[in-house]
Image 1: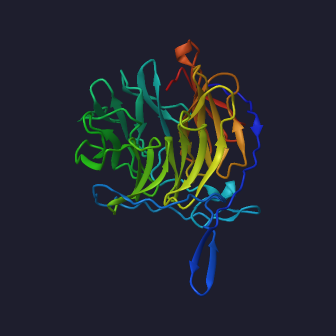
Image 2: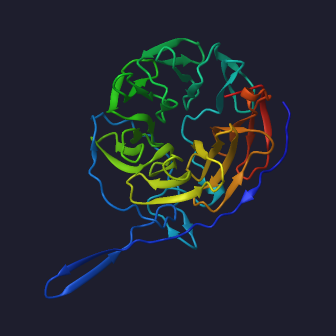
Image 3: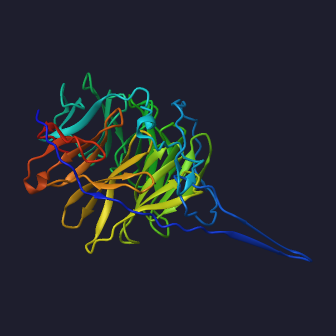
Length: 392
C-alpha cells in the first residue's frame, strides 16, 4: 500500500440572499398588514413558496427508531441559527457515528465484488461476476446488488457468500439500507414501477409507495424519500414519515438526492430543465437553498451525492458529456467548495465509518486508465491509496 499527498483547488463562494415576505391585506374598516419570514434552515435565506396538497401513498408500519446522539444547531454570524437542522459548525464536535456502522467498503476488482477494510486490508471476494449497482449494509454483513439483466435484487451474506434473489427489481438507483441494516429499499416493477423494501434475508417483501423510484431512508429511520418521475417539471422529490400515509412534495426537476440528516436533504437538478445546481432543502419543504451552481460553457451534471454522518459536508461529482468526472467537497452552508480531483477522473464512493475521510475511485477504466480506491480529507489533504486496481 502506498501513500500520496496532494491537495485540490479551493473555491470560496458567497451565497446570495433573498427574503420573501408574505403580506395579507384584510379590507374592512381597518387595514391590517402582517409580514412573517420563515425560520432559516442551514442558515438558509430563500423560502420555498406555495403549499401543495400531500401525495397519498400506501401506509407502512414504522421502522424501529435508531437513536443517535443529539448535535448542536449551526450558528453563523451572517445567517443566524437554524432550528430545523441538527448540524454542528464545529468539526471537532460534529461527528455522531451511526451505531453499528462497520469500517468496511465494497468495490469491484476485475468484475468481482470485493468487501475490505477502509484501509484496504482483509479483502473478501463476495461475487465473482458482480453487477455495477450495489450497496453494502451499514453493519457490513450484507451486500445488495441489482442484476439488470435478470431484473433481480441480489442479497449476499458477506461471511457465508450465500445468495438470496428477490424478483422484479429495476436498476433505477443503488439500493438504500435502513440505518439498522434490517431492511433494504429498492425500485421494483417492470410494468408498474414502485418502491419496495425487503428484509436482509430476502423475506417480507412489501410495497412502500406506488409510481415512485429511488427510495432512500433517513438517517434516523423514520422517513423515506423517493422520486415521482411523472411530475410536470421533471422528477418530484417526495418525503414521507413511515408512520404516516401522506408524502410532502419537497422539490421538482430533481436529478439525484441524498439525506443530509434526519431533517433535511441535498439534491441536484436536471441540467436540461435548468442549470445544474446543488440545493439543501428541509424535509418539510419549509426552506430550500441553492448551494452550488455550474457556470461552465459545456453541459455538465452533478451526480453521486454523499453526505457525511451529520450532513456537514457533501461530496459529489461534476460530470460532463465528454465523460470526465471531477469530485467536489462542499460545506453545508455553501461557503467552502473544494475540487478534490488532482490529475485524473474521480468518482465518489462515500464516507469512512468515522465520517472523517472520503473514499473514491481515481482513474477511468473505460478509457484504459489504471484505477485505485483512494481516500482523502474534505480539505484535499491526506490523500492515500487504499486498494490499487479497485474500480466502481
